[in-house]
Image: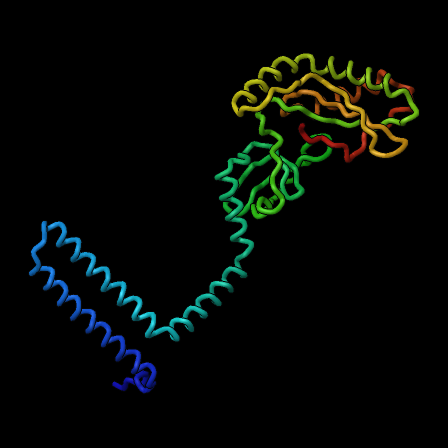
Length: 286
């Protein structure tokens, strides 16, 4: 059998140095332990501690010596390992981000199956969640389901965040926006809209207030009003917006919004000041 790898003089020097180091450490350990056994100490526990310390020092010396002797070879090996690791990370970057997003969701409790969320620009009800992706039953305009299932990679939770519209579980404060012309009677429109909202939400106000109070106490938050409220906004010159805030059950926001809008338009029929709500109207929560 031919040991061709021993033809390398540097390799022979390293092997010889390693053998010499091991022999020297074994000899030193033997001599020190013999000295400890012959010493008079106060207790056997101290002798055992010294013996263990010598053993650990020998191992540390062996590790450091091998690293010094084989430094060039270890450096080349480390570079190869780093290059391989970098290639693996680049090839599996998206998978790693998806798994990280899943871990973030599990540790933060940001949403669960059945919640209505918006993530990655998609809004819908969560019907499945795996290690790599989340499946949403899409919800379109008017809070109506489209019937389409959208699979969203969990990696979007690391960059875009997640909006959980059902975080409050039972009741939410819903916002809808109605644009009107600045020169028309916005005070009359405001009074009509507020009256319609009070009628539509009469059954929700007290339960919603009690629920919000419990939620505030649980999370040490200041209590806030849930009664219907109308704010006036001016997005640009010559235009006004009536921003209505109303309490509603989580799963009935679409019905409540349509009930208010239809009743409001019926009461102001023939008034050209009111135009249909914009499609991009804000329906986020306060």
